[in-house]
Amino acid sequence: MPEIPLAPIERIFKKAGAERVGEDAVIALRDVLENVAYEVSVKSIELAKHAGRKTVSADDVKAVVRIFRCINLS
Image (cartoon, rainbow, N blue to C red; front, side, top):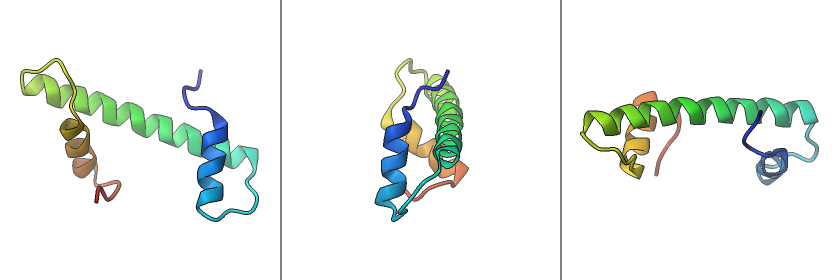
């Protein structure tokens, strides 16, 4: 079952300049975002454990994203 609601995804499309957005596009982006979030979470947990911590930090997440090179963090 999806974790992210569709309405915020549609708002992101609109904020990016889309006049109209098909429901299939919203669902597709939601699925991609959830998959990326899951993978980043898994790797962030691994990084925290490797550092001897139980708590995942923002630095762990940012490091994983830098490693994946999928978005600009500035």
